Figure 1 (cartoon, rainbow, N blue to C red):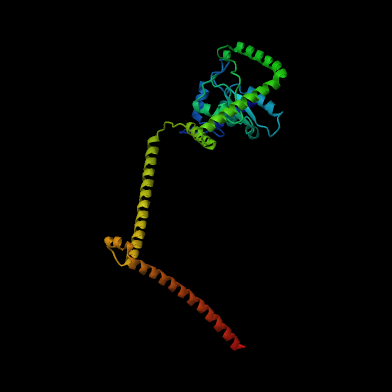
Figure 2: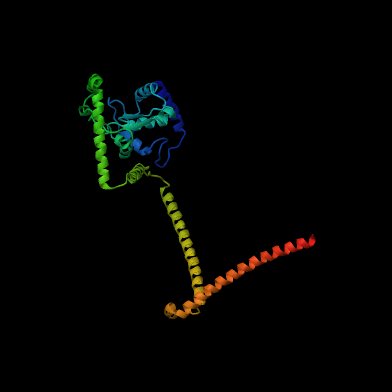
Length: 329
């Protein structure tokens, strides 16, 4: 596995050397946080043995364990991977192609202990286990004394803890699982009660949370020689768009004004007056009301006569066709 990792690093270094570095911050393929955040996390990592300077070194141990694990799992099973530098491990798997996409798509990466390394804030938003579906709650505070212990002491304590938990879990695993289930249900019911008291829709909260994550994990701006040109070009383009929209609004207002004025002119012509004062007086004029009603009846009669005329013409044509046919026989 170590040789495989070294070969992948060598091939990717050659491909990366042929590409120019982008001026703007961006997302790497398959990642949910920008490059600047991942670089910030990687720069702040100091390995546990105090000898490594980069978090991606010695990753073949974790990759070997994952390769061994997936050989014993069904092809449809998805696992949640808790790792102190889970963000860097996922980045390496996507960037260096350590795993096939069929296996990588079945892994949900999360960071187990955020106080162990200096993770950036967007990384904490995306990789926090309680902010990812499927990880549930953490019941144990881990081992606080290991934060300041040396390398050999850390290995000894971890080995002792693993042996103790291994022997203990065989006898009390059922009781432990039952307690975890009760604790999880208590937390869930409490959260649902709080959500019900707030009278806020859950779907709206999920939408707002997604918008917050998208805003806080967007790529950060970078310095560039062409920054001024880009900003000025954007401002000029927006000004042209605004001018075009204002011209369109003026044209639409003019069309609406013309149509309204024509309609008003026709209605005033039908009433026979142009004076606004006379219009106010004529609102309750009985004679005018009778005239308008008569005009409506006249219009309906005219339309009806026109329809009857068309019907009579069709009947006459049919009659003439019948007569002509009889004379021909």
